[in-house]
Structures are given as C-alpha cells and as structure tokens.
Amino acid sequence: MRLFRCDNCGNPIHFDNRVCLNCGFRLGFAPEALGMYALTPHESDPNLWRRVDTPARAYRFCANAEHDICNWLVPESDAEPWCQACRHNGLVPDPNTEEGLKRWRRINEAQRNLFYAFLRWDLPHPTRKEDPQGGLLFDLKNDEILPDGSCKPALIGHDEGHIVIRAAEADDLTREQQRELMNEPYRTLLGHFRHETGHFIWNKLVRDANKLDGFRAVFGDERADYGEALQRHYDQGPPPGWGASYISFYATTHPWEDFAECFAHVLHIVDTLETAQIYGIAIEQEVGLNPYEARDFDCIADAWIPLSVALNAIHHSMGERDLYPFILTPAIRAKLAYVHGLITRQV
Ligand SMILES: [Zn+2]
Ligand SMILES: [Zn+2]
Ligand SMILES: [Zn+2]
Image: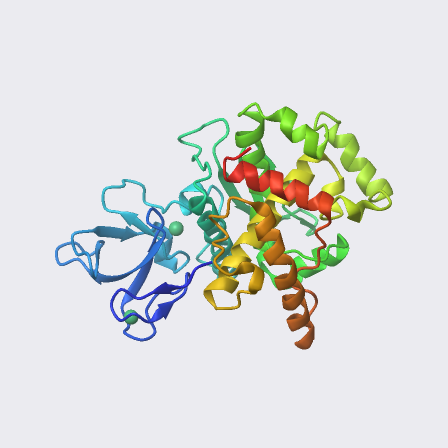
C-alpha cells in the first residue's frame, strides 16, 4: 500500500485516514485516480465536497461514510450511492449496534485494501447489476442463533462471484479460535477477501477466457470431484511432502483452492513489498522495483524472500509469530508466477 500526501499541507497521509492530522482537512480516497484528496465543503450543496487543489472536481462520500465505515469518494456524476468497493455489498452487519459497527468497520478496511489491488491491476470487478450471473457480490453474514440457543456459524465461501464473509471473524477471538481449529498458520479478514476473490478471478480470467489448458498444466485438472476432494482433505489431511509444491495445507485440497491460495499470496506479497518500499525498507534486490508494475514474478520473489525472512525475525523480536509463515519452493514460485502472469495479462 502506498503512502499519500495531503494536497493542502503535504503531510504524509495513510489510506485509512479520514482527516489530515496536520492541517485538519477532511480526506477521501478517489478510486478512479487511486489518490487521496484533501477536501473542502461545496458552497451550495452540503452533500458535495471539492478537491482543495482542483476545485472544479466535486465528489460525494460513499454512503457508508455516514457511519465512518468507508472513506472513499464517488464522483458527482456517478449516480451510485456507494463507492467502487462498497457497491458490491449485499448483506451487511447492523451499524446501529456496537458489535455490528465494529465488525463492519474492520471488514470494510480489508475490503478496501482488496479493491486497491484490483484497481491497481485493473482486474475485472463487475457488480451484480452489471453482470447478474457472475458479478462480485459480498454478503457479510452474521451467524445464526438456532431455536435451542446454539450458534450456527456463517460459512465463508463463494459461488459464481457471490462471496460470503463471516462477519464474526472480524472479532479477534473468533478468528483466532478458528485459526487454531483449522491448524492454519495465518488467518485474517484480508486473507479471506483475497482467497475468495481468487475463485472469482479464476472464473473470469481462466474459465471464461478459455485458458483451462494452461491452468491445468500448472495446477492439475480441476475436473476432479470437488466434494470428494474436500472430504478426503478433512478425513486424511494433506499428502506427505505437500510443502514442496503447495503454499498451504488448504491448497492441497483441489486445484481451485490451490489457485485461490496462490492468488491471495500474490496479493499479499506485492502489496507488502509496495508498503516496505514506500517506507524505505527496500532491500538490495528490490531497489527500483515497482511491485505492482513488475512484468516478471521472479524479481518480485527475489525481493520478497529476504524481506519476509527479515519481517519474520522482526516479529520474533516482539514475541510474535512469523508474519509470513510460508515457504516459496521452486514449484510454488512457478504457480505464483502463473497467477501473476494472468493478473498482468501476460498468460
Ligand atoms: Zn494536511
Ligand atoms: Zn465505500
Ligand atoms: Zn476457496
């Protein structure tokens, strides 16, 4: 993630900032320009804001700014009440409860981070209105309380662009319990968004683009029965030696899951490399590399491996677990390179 500068005073500002801490101007993110703008109220319309340094441009805030959930802007000419990220939402937590509001803010932060990458790479993200069969739709779903008082957790998953995120996973306790239960080294809301949209990207950039042969050559045949594969995974666990060719336990389940995991990792790696570079933590291999514009995954991996080793050591110094508890073997790098090639339209 980039660091931005306040149009008004030049102070560094972050992607999630609502006001400039130096000059007090309100800030908003304009997704179409990937820029953070300092804003002043429009003289004649209380719902509109003008850019400080380009007053001719007027914007509304996303409708979710009302509850301080979102800080993205919608151009005045766009009739949609929600920004490019929030317009994909179906079910959402109740912002009128303390719990709902806290969850939704956390989930939205992850969702906007996801969309930043989609916009940087110009990845497809039609709404359900634009693509009724396969557009992106997120249900941020609450768990169900059954008549006997027990809790039925919302199931995270995807179906032709319709993605369910379990709202309760915005709570650290719930998510950490789930991580332990599933024996996962890493589990975050952002990871869920990146993984589940990986399935959507597979639909759009592999299946619908007739690139199945190339996909199968790297990930295997996805026509293997998915239900059986999942059952086998839960019954028998991963195959021995899986770490040589799979980024995670879960990736071993089925080629679809392997692809979604690899998609998530390309996003993890590229975004974290960008952040490191912005803060001057670039290591030798990374100097001059713009991770979002790199045409070659090898240079990304060459920069990432030493950086992730350093980040893990830094985490240990703080008594924390590895930040990036994964190993990129040559076979895994080849899969990530394929996904990166797809994202950058080179495959
Ligand atoms: Zn400022
Ligand atoms: Zn929004
Ligand atoms: Zn999946």
